[in-house]
Image 1 (cartoon, rainbow, N blue to C red):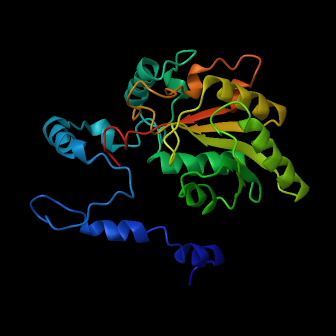
Image 2: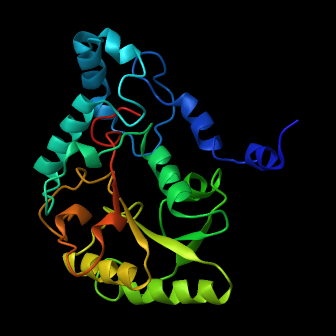
Length: 261
């Protein structure tokens, strides 16, 4: 018999979309399958990545042990820090001690929620936003989500913080304590990037209410073309005088650019 929360989780429809994915088209084995536009998967990289892994993957014995713990070994964390410094243009170089690995950004979302908010406390998100944040942030943590509507305000420019503040104060009047603001930059599903001015405004808003700022930047390297607002990582904005850097958390993964799940 399941626990009460296990029974609730068993009713979740989160796997329904993935079950439909079993009929995805494959050139040779399933040419009449479904081409799904519901998930952002980089199918063009599959052949390259699988060939690279099958030819070049070498495992030493240390890799089969607990080694350096659950946050990723030193070599991996140094490699990621180097990658971030080369592509995200951070205000200050990211070093390996500030890099933690998990089994995908979904796991990082959950880790942020469970470590930054207590059961019954909330995270603040704009709307619309990636639908699975709800499961990522609440299913096991028992945290809440408060959504901020923008009512015609551009949520990627100056003025967005005002709408977040309205939602925060409304939640407070209902007895809900918000512990963190979470943004998706570049945005899913709108595809827009935050302006530097907007990011600074959000820094000030988070400092005012002592919130953590979580920036999901899994689409950081998926911005193309010179028109429109270009991607600016939260890491590239100097937080001095705006927000305590200890309350800034950036999430990134390889699933969108390089294809590994």
